[in-house]
Length: 348
Image (cartoon, rainbow, N blue to C red; front, side, top):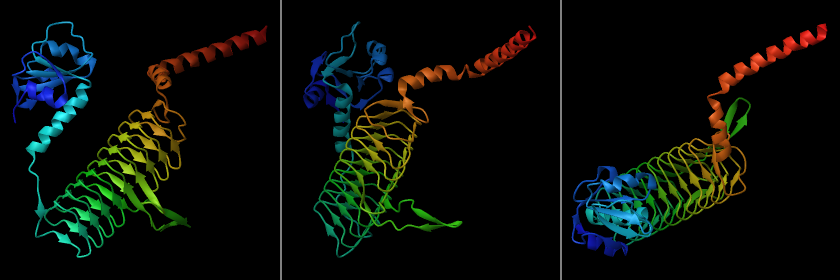
C-alpha cells in the first residue's frame, strides 16, 4: 500500500514539515531508512540518525527540537511511538485477508452458540454449551472446551487451547499454542508420593487481553485465576493457579508467577522474572530482567536482581561484583597483618 505524508498526517492529526506529497509504501528503522519508507524517532539516543536517514518520512514528538537540517519530511505528533502503532494497525487491517465462514472440517457442538460474522478454520473444535461472540476469528486446530465463553472481536490463532469453563472477554488475542485453563500445579504429599489436588476453578481473561505464543495460564483450585483488562503477556509466560494480574500490566517472555500471587495495576516485568507464591505486588512496580521476588512489594518502585532489591542499590552493588576477588585477597592480607601485630603486642 502507498500513502502520502499528507494522508498519514491526517490519520494521526499531525503537523507536516516538508513535502506533503511525498509517498511511502513501507516502514524502516531510522538507522536503515530507505527512500519510500516511513520511520520514527522516539528515543533521544537515536537522534543523530535523523540527520542522515534516507527515509522519506519521519515521525517525531511534538516537542522535538532539531539541531541540524533534516532531509526527510517530518510529521510532528504527540507520541511518535504510539503514532507508529496506529499506522501499523491500519496497514495490518488492509493487508490481511479477513476470513469469514465456518470450514466444513470444523466441529461445533449442536449446543454451542456462535455469533455473527465468524471465521472458524480447519479442524477447530467448539465444545458443548460454548458461547462465542460476534466477529471472532478461530484459526485451524484451535480448541474451545465445554462451557467456555468468548466475547466479541476475539482472535484465537492455531492450536490455542481453552479448557472447559474458562471465560475470555472482548477484543482479546490469543497467539498460537497458548493454553488457558490447564490444571494448576497442586499436589499433596503422602509419604514419599504426591496426591493430585483437583483444580475446580477456571480462568477469566477480561477485555483487551493479549496472550503470547505458548503462554500458559492455569485454572484455579477454587474460584478463578484472573487476568484483568488490558494485560499483555509475551511468549512462554507461566501464570499459576489463583494468580490475579492487575489492569494494564505487561510481562516479557519467560516470566513465571507462582500460585495465589496478586499483582497490581500497570506493572512491568522484564524477561525471566520469577515471583514466589502467596505474595502481593503494588501498582506501578517495575521488575528488571531475571529479578527474583520472594516477598510483598508494598509501593511503586523499580527492582533488579535475585533476590530483587531497589534498582539503585543493585547498580551500586553490581559495580563491586567484579572487585570481590581483589577485595577478598586484600581482606586476607589485612587479617594476616593484624594477627602478626597481635603477636608482637603480646610479646611486649
